[in-house]
Image (cartoon, rainbow, N blue to C red; front, side):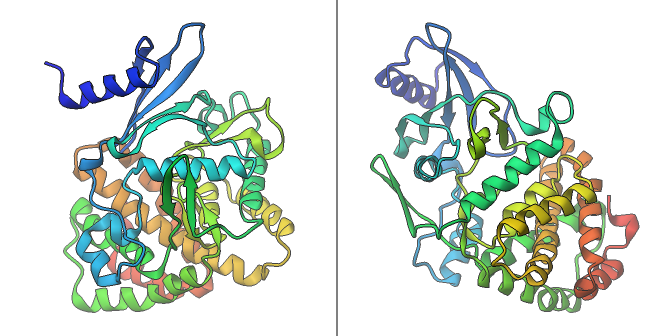
Length: 363
């Protein structure tokens, strides 16, 4: 029996002129989105995105107070787009307007969570390196995209094709909520007792300056999930257009270091310390107006925060929800975190982890 959702999708595709396309389901990730490739007559293809609106909690109203955001749920508190097609459509248009290679949106039905997109192919950085593409060249291009994105202040509101989306700030509350998921999920995964009140109070006191610095530096357009599985190599295009961009709907205004923490401490593939250092040097050479010491200190602190978020919200939670494949990424993420905590400025947080999550519990 055909579900109501499938009927809606069929009707949308028919109205968009793609009723005769052959549909092939593509493998997904931990999100609630689903993708299909549409094969058209003549041999071309498109991507069909399905993001059912009802399966996610609500997004953050632009003027919501911290208390209101917390009451609305995780997406509002952390300022996630909840897969909003309006966010995708408007962000794609903004990126394309900057000369970057986001997919062209061919058709959309925002309220239903459906869109047909340009097919940028399957050349993910994560698949090409090191087999058919040189790692250094691809990472240099990805860093250059960051420089291009940060060359001018982002707008307050993104608009395209009748859709509007506010570009909110990755503020201290959003950083706090994301980082604190570690406290909920990691003990459940590894069999630690719940952290006591003293440990929690110390955690907040140690992390609070990091979250404040993250908000204070939030000045540039930020993809928010900028890593090798969301970047495509398009060698036939020019300059920064050679990097295809995916999964950018959670974009915010954030610290210039944030996307680099994802790229250069990629939870799903090893990025060597030498490559990380070289790419940070490339970025800083292109942005001489930044205070080098301050930027690198912020980078390490935010990278640590991001690693903790990934270990809790993304990996431990997913394993406990029945997706054991995420275990394979945990040791790498712990190595990144431990590297960041070696920064003398992070000594307090290093000591916290050594006391409360000793090596035997860093699975």
